[in-house]
Length: 438
Image (cartoon, rainbow, N blue to C red; front, top):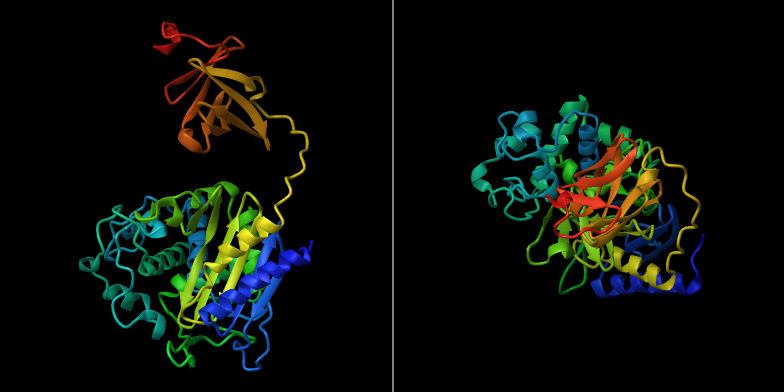
């Protein structure tokens, strides 16, 4: 479904403003709605040698959006039982510095590791082997202790790429191709650029002239930022984060990745990080995705899973409003064409839990259990979705009760009360002297 002309005009005006105000040689953008790329726009003719506006099939380097793919590979290993997020890195990479940090620390940038590997700036120089990378590592280079703060570490993702390669017995690149790009039909996402591809530039701050930027093979640091992609391919990738493909990751795993783990204490949820994903609190919604930066290139990919919309942005400059342009385009799309509420359809029969539906009380606090999308929903004084684990046993999926067990207590076949995290829920209110409080 295409966008209205006024929506398209507002989106293009924002892209044009970003290109002009940030002095970008070119900027390329697209917006996604309900799994479809519904709009693309470009501004600036200094992308390819031909001097024409870059199309949605022109490759740009996507920088750290690559990290989200490395994170998918890690979570696939976890879901397949090959590792635990609480595993020490040294369990999978014996002898490496920071071996006591966990896989979770590396995913969330909360391990206190130094941001960059030692040696020449890796983004502007030919990459090194994994042995060379780790030989230069030292815990004396740490930025701080684990779990103190969110401290972004490109180096940590170099280690994660090696972990998944060793666990699967093949290279990181082959895993990306076979387990992500192939299933999502991202045929124009590659390790090296394939024409048509943009040239990376930096813009001289005074003369306004363009200086070409290099594009080296990142070697062992490739899992942190090597890949090239297009608006069309990234639109497919953005759609995956809205509607996860079970072949890649379950919806529950995506929700886990999109849960805040670490944040900048100065900004809180406005700049927090999950497991491989940047999170932006955009009241009342949460945007998930990532930014990207490599010499001569900038990128952004963010989605709003609730409103089922997203945006991807690519530019060929070292500095400018490209990454933050993606959330801006989401806001414009939502303002001009608010998403239509999904059509309601009757719920399918529950496999279990029908007799839990209705009113409950926590003390004198009214609560209800309903069903939505085949999942029990507890709301009121305590709020959580509930998944069945066994007969008369459920587990909280989110909120304060996430991970807690709800037990259904019966006398014969009659439910007398429910218990969860020491709270007792009954069908009628009760006072302080009720024996069920003890």
